[in-house]
Amino acid sequence: MARRTADRALPSLGWLRLRPGALRSDVDRNLLLAFALSFIVLWVWTVMQPPHPKPAAPPQAAAPAESSPPPTRFPEPATPEAPSPAGPPAQAGAPSTPAQSIEIARPLYLAQLSSEGASLRDWELKGYRDRREEPIRLVSASDAVATAATPFAELALGDLSKQPWRVENRSDTEVRFAWESHGVALRKTFSFSDDGYDFRLRIDVSNHGSTAIAPAFLVEMPLLTRAGNDFREQSAAALHAGSVVRTPLTSLGSAGIFGWVSGKKGGEPVEYTGDIDWAGVQTPYFLAAFFPDQPDTARTRFVSLMPGKQGVVQIYFDPVALQPTQSATREYRAYFGPKEIERLEAFAPSAAASIDLGWSFVHPMTRAFGWLLAVLHSFVPNYGWSIILLTILVRVAMAPLTVKQMRSMERMRRIQPMVKEIQEKHADDRQKQSEAMMSLYRQEKVNPLGGCLPMFLQLPVFVGLFYALRSSIQLRHAPFFGWIDDLSAPDLLFTIPGVDFPVRVLPLLMGASMFVQQKLTPVQTDPAQARMMLIMMPGMMTVVSYSFPSGLVLYWMMSNVLAIAHQLFIGRQMNPAAR
Image (cartoon, rainbow, N blue to C red):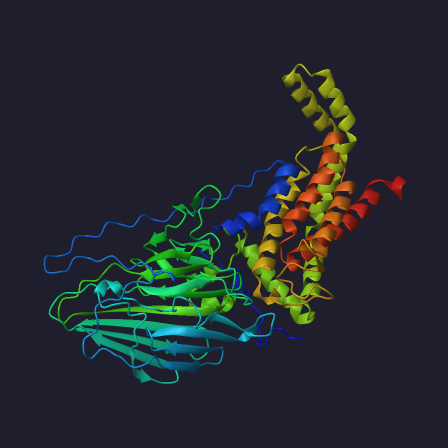
């Protein structure tokens, strides 16, 4: 059954452009654990990841002029259990009509606006469906916090995100809401694109009263778990100072293991000040974010409403002092759609940073492999077979390095008896032992690092493939065969009754193939250590990959199978007696 109805154009080689800024996230560290541990254990090589950037401390607000009102603190979001108290009653002229819903139908999405709070209450993607074949919703009317809500609590007029606004003007692509009270006139204008997943939000504030006001232009959007919807496993995210910072919903407001989460004590908001290109909510394959018109002075914070279950993302500015007759405007661009890299780059170069391409030094590899995977799929209309073909191509390209590595390891294995003899003979003299070892290496023309260097050279290739498969939205809901019906999710053969433990075949096959590969690898170390490695490495990798998407594990398993075949072939070439 077709899982998606949206057509995809073949990616261009424009993917090979480097994106500024590196992604740093908790998810990165977990998913790269397999690579880090394997290279640490096998080659005694330490993988270091740069520290997560700390949020900049909010600067002290400058003292306003004598004629300006004192700056007011932007509002705390109300929790469902304890709503914010209502402000003063609206004067005559404030809207009092029931909330009105307005539907916007565009080629790629259906949106619904509400006059209550002049907010966005529904955003349905036409070309993407969940496992139940229902449309993906990035915004839902049941959300506790309305998207694009603007409370304006600092104006002491009540929570305007809950008040009915007046529909001042509407068309197929633009809707303008108005609210007037206490000498304050507000306008919110939504303008929708014809051929994309984006829209513009313009907010105008005019002071028609007799005293100064100081609006903060705070915009909110909800962060929550959507049961049964692919827009789940949400993280609050922002592009701050050129790097993506994110806090998973499951961590927001939680004290964590050591009492700290994202540099903040449990329950405290996570704040970032200045240089905010965008902020919003994301999952591995979808993004809903606002792009402020003045990123240098924009701020964002992630606030927990119910720890680990519900939160809110706020984008705001320092309060702007408006004297009587003065006005101010803020504009936001917004993208609510799939993480298709070319579409994101066309919308805004900074938007593509939401796609996790791994460490900066592997970005070109990740983009190239993503492009190659799409090319292969244009010839083989099954992403499972496309992954297998991609694995074969990579193995063929890496064959010269692999042969060099295996021959070096075989030579090292053959001289192990002589190495052991030297170690026993000069056990009490490290200097003589080292000199004798170097002499042996020169005499036998063996480089002790010859087996490691090819592996180091292959590291960017393997990591690039890892991220290309992990971040490719094309694999979402893409079936292979049999029980593997979604290459972007872990495979599931069945669940053990009573304990609810999932049985996944691909990780077990991957672990078995790694065991066979380790068994065929020439032993250069102590036999006892080799036996320990033979059990430990496949077991550890099986556990680590148990929650990986099946497309990744399929690649890993096929890579091991091809490596086994290659080792057997090279072994016969180097040892004629074994033929």
